[in-house]
Picture 1 (cartoon, rainbow, N blue to C red):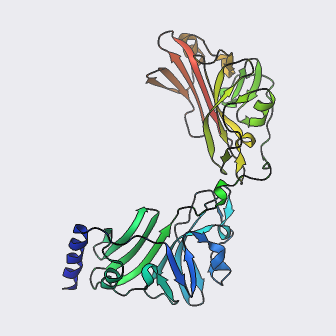
Picture 2: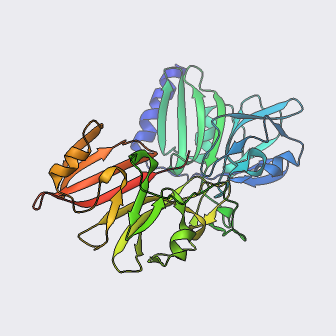
Picture 3: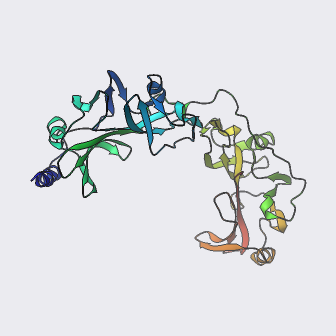
Amino acid sequence: MKRFCILLFTTVFLMAASAAQAEESFILDGTSYTLPFALAELLDDGWEINHPEEILSPGSYTLADELRRGSASCQVQIINLSMNDLQKRDCYVGQITFTKDFAEDVILPGGLALPNSWETVYDQLGTPSDLHAETPEREELLYGGKDFFDKLSFTVDTEDGSVTSVTLRSFTSPEPVARKAAPTEQPSMDFDYEQPESLGKHLDAFHVRLNGELYQLPMPYRLCAAEGWKPLFDVTHQIASGETLDNLPMQLPMGGNVMIGLFNPTANACAAEDGLVYMLMVDSRSCDASFELSGGLSMGMPENELLTALTNMDYLVEEQSDGIVYRLFDDLSRTIAITVDPTTDHVCEIMLLHLPE
């Protein structure tokens, strides 16, 4: 009979419009919290969590952490909403789950205490916006929520209709958040750049000669700026720790534009001008520059000479709308892509990508 009630309820709410909106606020022992909030607020109130010194990268979150105080415990997900690597203790609570036997006083959205049945939830919050059958024995009642990262949900035992847990989740950044804050000083780059003395013979060294000047990827952006490369983008734009900023146009001193990509290898956010150039792309159709690689490869060389130079090397060939691309190495951290113009059979574009290890 109770199973029938659950199924009947399912039919009713699938036919009805949701009357409730998800809220991510709750009261715990008289203190109000709105997700996401700083984990430090709970730690300062006597709650404990395992491995508070664990480092989370920007935008990452834990799958399951247990918060404990005395005999009470609950499950949380901790998220780093900043642009810097942070210890878990300095991040935000993005999700919290209370089970039916939680040993502290909790008031949920709508003034609802931890409910003991789906009927109570329905009476207090109205028709759910969605239902998800987790297993044949469990169903999730979902209220409001703009997406997966923003919800209020109740897990129901389909056999007896009891609520076994309540989950509140919001990964939406509160304002203000450090993710949009600029660093006050230039980050320390643990990167030792060596100016190459020659192109050499090995392509995996990522040595290039551009308009007579030797470079090695990756290289500090400030080196390019010091040699007269003019940025056609906002050099103060922030790059989060471990992230990239791509497809950035730069004007060379002798004219013509190239495209670069910047990488932030530090543990803190940095301005674009403090990043590393990890990607460089030169297109002869928009930039009349001399461009050479190791092993005798160069812009404008005939396709037959390119194939001779690539003898005994592994590469992929792709036919694209703007030409034939010969791709070497081809992984996430290093790639060389050489494009041949099908109308001239000469190299017209070269792109190098090399992320530091």
